[in-house]
Length: 310
Image (cartoon, rainbow, N blue to C red; front, side):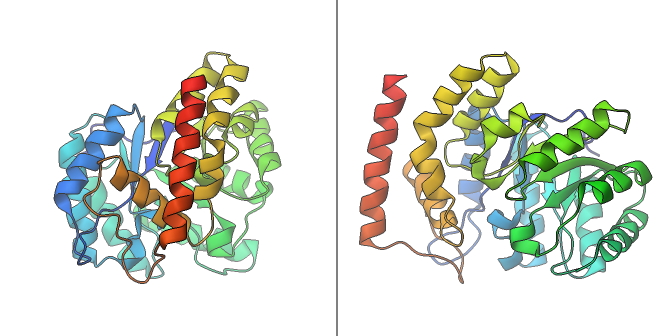
């Protein structure tokens, strides 16, 4: 069983883990160990595996289970692990959720089905999900309309918070969406059950999201120590210093957030930092060319200069 269950108090940085593959495309479990150690060394508060940027959609069920078990074993309870379980098949979603929790995960993350269309359909879908999962599995709602083509209003999200106690976290990734963060937090300040808000989009808007009431970040980034530092400084009330740290990394944050290409950059950076033996993105996926590598070299040089200047 899990040493900890995800709840409304979750805060800090829940890093979205990459999934290491070998040059032949096989799951790389040795690099998985190094990746877990790296994330812990950088001070993350939690780890989210099998997310969209973790290439879960390209993995066989047994691979997903193998990767999860290896990560759980290596982390060994040091931080909670959340598992992305979104799947068009309800039985697959429920099976992975229960396997994850029985294996020691802290909770699961679920996105709406692609293109649900109406808010009533979103509500009906999550009613089925919560009923199937039961009361004992905490859920993070992944709000990422860019990928799901499904939007949820603040009013509907608040209704789900009121109706389903298992819903303990919003992974906010709508863009633009700062006003949604403000509105969700305002509702809890006015008496609605409070839920944790962790934000994605590669950290691109993190300082503003924290000022709006977010509790931290749930995203992937090749420099997780930046996310950790910004959240810690903000929590300490050092808002300008938090933005100074953020600004030092901004050129690369922006570069890594290119839709459809950012994962190749992120995995290349993790490879260069000695975390993954190969930067391979599993097919189908983006690849880098000589010009891409040259651009990245220059960005890394500028980031190092910025950090030194701090």
